Image 1 (tube, rainbow, N blue to C red):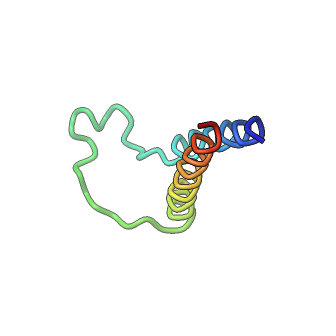
Image 2 (image 1 turned 90 degrees about the vertical axis):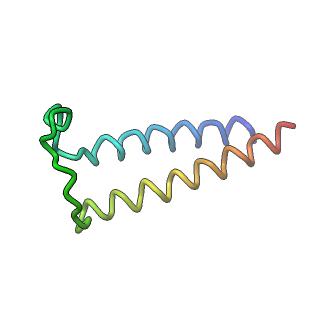
Length: 73
């Protein structure tokens, strides 16, 4: 049971990493020198879906981590 939970956590963590990397702001290193400008814009389409999926999987990962700790102690 514990091994299965740990494998699921590894898969979730890799998926979260991939989702975060896909959400690039597009500024790159230009943001260091003020290239972004801090303009607020709404998320639409696939960008919104990626954002919501990242939040959902992160919450799931956190809950799974708490369950794993509760089972092992």
